[in-house]
Image 1 (spheres, rainbow, N blue to C red):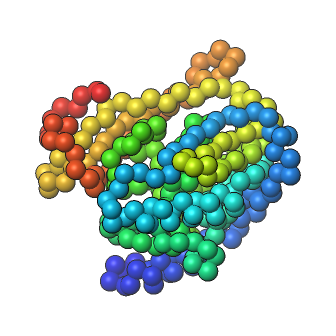
Image 2: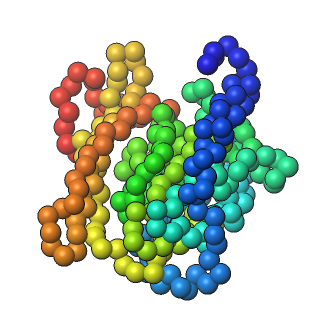
Length: 274
C-alpha cells in the first residue's frame, strides 16, 4: 500500500481488510469470563513489570497516561477463560482504543518515530501476555516483534526481543490454548507494577526453561546501533522423557537511546557469548 497516503487512511484500509479476513476465525476466540476464579487454583506462569520507567521528560506525561490505559485494558481481559483449543485475541478483546472509550494519549511508535496516540502504551500488556504464553509453550498464532529498542534496561526481567507489539486491528497478538485444561487470565495494575498470571484447574505437565545468549550491541555500516541476541526455549515433560522441544530464536532491533561506547561492537566483529 502506498506510503504516500496519510497514515490514518492507510491504517483504516488495513483494518477493513483485516476484519474481512478474520470473520470466520472469530468463533474460536475466547469470550467467557470466570465467575469464580478460585476454581482455577494452579498458577502455571506469572510475570510483572514496572509501570513507569526512566524516560525523556518530554514523554513523562504520556507514560503516566499509559497507566490509565493499562487499567482500562486489564478490566477487559481479567478473568477471561480460554478453553482448550480456544484462541486468545488481544485486539478482539480490547477493541479500538479511542478517547470516547476513556483512553488517553500514550506513547506509540509510528513509521519509526515516537508519537502520541489514544491507548498508547498497551504494548506493555501485550508484551507481558506474550511472554507468559511463550513460557507456557502455548501455540503462538500471531505475534509481531518490536522493530526498535526504545528505552535502556530498567530492572529488565525478560530477555531482549521477547515482546509483542499490537495495533488495532492490524497487528494482533493471538495464541491458542494447547493444554488439556482451561486457562484463566489474570491481569491487573497494582502500583508500581503491571501484574499477570495464567491459572488453570490442573498443573502443567511439563517445565519450560528460557535462556538468553549471544547478547550484544552492534554498529552497522550505516552508523545505526542495533541490539541482538538469541533466546533458547527448552520444554521438558515431567515424566522424564526427552525434551519435547528445543528451539532458538534470534532477535534484532534498532536502539533508540545512547549506549556506552565500550559496549558497542562493529558489525564485522566475531560474536561473543555474554
